[in-house]
Length: 266
Image (cartoon, rainbow, N blue to C red; front, side):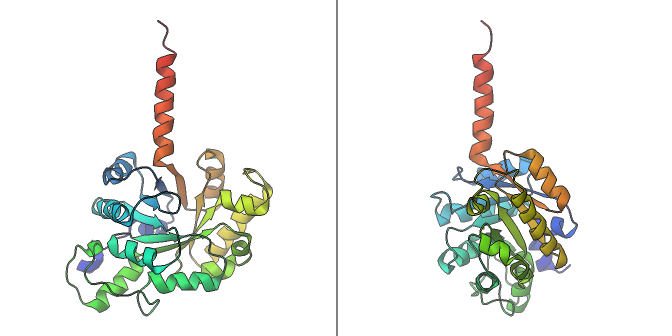
């Protein structure tokens, strides 16, 4: 392994390459870098900072990402819009990958590749030395190839159109993984909240089969309250699990402790 590649490591990608299950925590509440160390202590492999569903600034997001980098937690960012002012800035600012919402076709997936990957795979603009390789100087031909390998493009599978085009989407060069957004997909199917519905299971089956055919992976999203379904879909072949948000974990622990104290007999 070259010196650059030994520095520039995506531990999530390495686990997926070994067909291991990746545990991810979503960051929506925390605004400071401590959340990365909390995730590591808890045993997570990766965090994804959800800019689509909160008001975190790009600056705060990138500080969290750089903190995660330094301790071996792979930082991803779920962008609020699939545009260069978000995607390119969070990647240059420290993210090791992006999660792009509302992708509906292979053509749209290809547009994301253009923004996320450097030439010859995409057309990402070179921004000079980056935190991912410790701001050190390496030949641009070496850095761009290594960054392409280390940077993850995860596309959300959350629409009926995407499901109909899943085989073409996941086969797109430069797309690394599908993340199934169970809530939005159920909404599109007209089965809101019906996680046990056979149509959701069929969607997972189709996505996993399509990904397996091209040597890629599927992630489970939106099922944090259903350990049974997360287990089922991992056993079917999914390898990335979005386990829940930092806020949900905090509320669950606080609620349980408050309930305990209220129940102490005086």
